Length: 496
Image 1 (cartoon, rainbow, N blue to C red):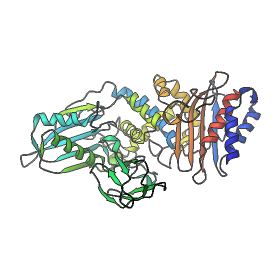
Image 2 (cartoon, rainbow, N blue to C red; image 1 turned 90 degrees about the horizontal axis):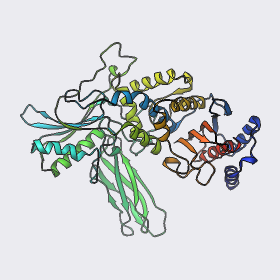
Image 3 (cartoon, one colour; image 1 turned 135 degrees about the vertical axis):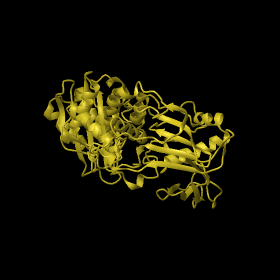
Image 4 (spheres, one colour; image 1 turned 45 degrees about the vertical axis):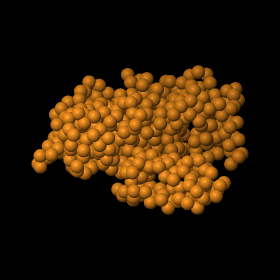
C-alpha cells in the first residue's frame, strides 16, 4: 500500500515535460496509474478538449453507479426548469402560489369552535429553528400566530404538497436514521437532522448525552479508561421514537458529535413549532400531528391517464409565510457540500411544475430535458436526485455531455461556480492540495459503497480547459479509488 501511495504522489507531482502528449502513450500512463487501485475495481473515464475531441477514453460508454455525481444532473435540471417558473412566483393566499416554494402558517377552524395551527411546507430546504437563526426562521412564523391567537388546539405539520415518498428506491436501508439518509418531505426543518453530543462521564459510568428531547434516549454506553479506543453507535427502529446509544467512550476523549436523521419531518417541524409557540406565550391545549398525502396513481405520469395533476392544499386561514432561499444558493449548497436532502427537494420541486411533485414527475421532466440536450438516452438512468440510490447509472460520455451542454447555458456560470474547487473548498478542500491542479479543478465528487466518482472541468498545464468524468465501481471492501482517480487526472493535466 505504501508503494502504491508513493507512485500516486510522484505522479501528481510530475512536471509536464515528463509526460507524453501522444494519445496512445497517455492512455497507457493513465491505465498504469489506475492499476494501482484495489483489484477488481472497474473504471470509466472520458476527457475531452474544448472542441469535444477525446483526449483519453476508457470504457466511456459503460454505465456506472454515479453516487453524488447524480447531483450534477439534478442541479442542472433545477436551474434549467425551476428558475423560469419560480423567478416571478408570488406567495398567495389560496393555493399559496403554485410555483413559489417556502413555508407557510395559518389557522384552521375546528368543529368544536377551536383552532389548529397548520404549518405547510412547500419544499423549502432551509427552514430553521436555531436560536441564532437570521433568515428562514421558524420563530418568525410562530410570531404570526402569537400576534393573532393566545390559545390554539393542535399543531399540525403539513407535508402534502409532495406525495409521501420519504426515501427513494435503491437507497440502502442502513442509511435511514443517519444525516445522509434523512427522510424527504415537503415540510422540512433543520435539514431534518437532530444534533447529538456525547461526552465522557466518570469511568465506569454512562457518558453524558446532549440531545433535543424529540427522541427517548436509552443510554447503554459506558465510560472506559483513559487512552482506550472510543466506539459509539446509535440504533433506532424506522419510525421509532426510542434512540439507543451503545458502545464505549474513553474518559479522556473529546466529545463525540453526530447528526441523526429524522423519519417524520412534518411531525418534527410541528413539535419544534409548538415549543416556539409556547415560548411566545401561546397556549397549546391539543397535540402535535403530522399530515402527509399518500402516494396515488395520479402521482405517476405513466398511470395518470389524463387526470388533473393539480393537488389541492388543505384549507387554512393564511397568516404569513417565507419564500425559500434563492435557487442559486440552494444549488451551491447541494454541490459544494453534497447535501442530499436539498437535492431531493429540488427534484420534487421540478415535479410540481407540471405534475404533483412526485419523484416520478421530477425524474420524467429531467429525462426529457437531458434527451433534448442531446445526451445519449442509454447513458443515464436515475431513481433519485441525490445519488444515494444504487439504481442510478451514468456513462462517462453522458456526464461529459451534460457538463459541456450545461456550461453553454445562460445559467452555466452559476452552475460551474457551485462546484467544489480542488484544494480550496467544498468536498474537494483536502484533495489536490499542493498539486498543480490546486485551484484549477472544478468538479463534483461522489462516494457510495464500492463507488467513487469525480466529474467536472480542469485547467491543464498548457492553460487549456478539459472536461472530464471519472467513475470507479466495484471497489473492494472498505478501500477507495479516489486517490488513483486524482493521480490519473494529474497525469492527463500535465500532458496537456
